[in-house]
Amino acid sequence: QVQLIESGGGLVQAGGSLRLSCAASGRTFGSYAMAWFRQAPGKEREFGAGISWSGSSKYYADSVKGRFTISRDNAKNTVYLQMNSLKPEDTAVYYCAAAFTRMTPTTAGAYDYWGQGTQVTVSS
Image 1 (cartoon, rainbow, N blue to C red):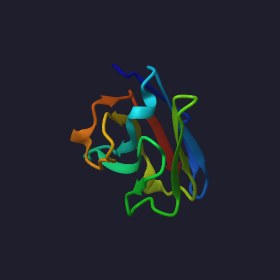
Image 2 (image 1 turned 120 degrees about the vertical axis):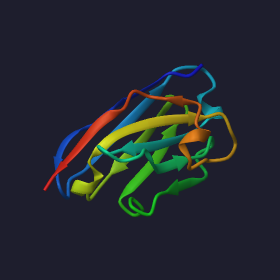
Image 3 (image 1 turned 90 degrees about the horizontal axis):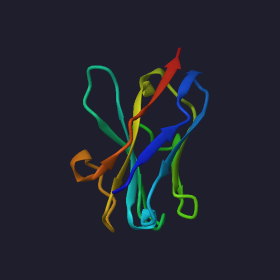
Image 4 (image 1 turned 135 degrees about the horizontal axis):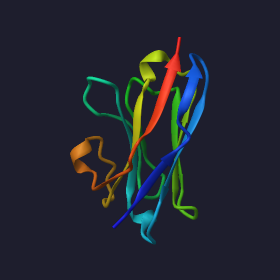
């Protein structure tokens, strides 16, 4: 069982930056691929960024590529999402997710555990 707790969301102006953190419980954090998804009002949950268990592979949605950076610290059981050059269309609830796999899935159904989400609001 893995519990995920996100933090770092908030209100920011367009062009600004935020750093999300996701702290995981359990001793097997290093065995999980991790990802950030987001869900805007009235829209489906969408993949944002993913990172392999070792951190050697990273994947990004086209909408965030070049602006967001995912990273992890297995010693601290934490995954991060650095978000720069934020746009109003980045406004959403951001969810951290974990999958017990050596792959790095980009679909929500492949993830076993989810956090409660943190709100990110970007004003224009």
